[in-house]
Amino acid sequence: MNHTSCADFLEFFGYFHGYVVSEDGDSLNLVYSLLDASPISKIHAFKDLGNDLFRQNQFVEASACYDKACRLLSDVLKDVSDLDLNSLSSLAISLSLNLAASAIKLRAFDGALILCSMVLNFYPHHAKTLFRKAVALRSLNKLSEARCTFEEAVSVEPQNNDILRELDEVRKLHVFNLNGKRVVDDSFKAN
Image (tube, rainbow, N blue to C red; front, side, top):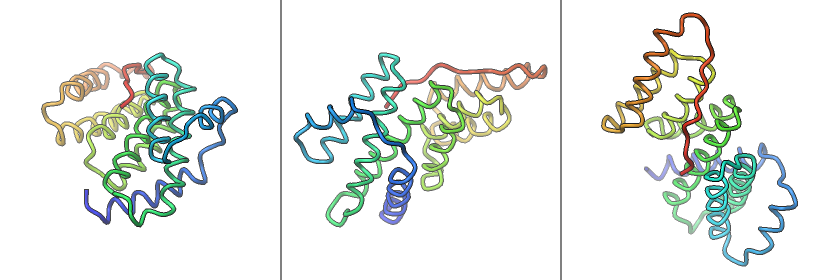
């Protein structure tokens, strides 16, 4: 990742999560009060907790943890003068993709598209983001767009079996879905 892309993405990420994301509940405040660590450690702790909750199919709670981590990162980004932009950008991408995966599990496909589009505006060849965007599109029954996005992901990672399998599936659905049947996917994992 180049320095300019990282800085631009992080500026947008901070703006997006500083103003758009909603407030958390009391349970997250309790977790937050128990963490006596640096802001980056707190961000990673919320991300890890979100990942654990995601694996337990607790998608609302996982999403709340990722949301809190995003807002904490947004606060950290107010003063990035001595911080590693590549590391922060990678963390912001990971959190955005985790939120997108949660949104897909919660059937908030438009939200997943917004999150993926945010990342793709700065990193247009990010295979995992393309993959999540394609699944959201497929879930919205936008099969042509999903197929094109999966093909784009394959061009970035031609040996990725998950992408190849999903591309094959969406091609079949596109051919056999002429009756307007809606297709929804449930095959996601958090980063």
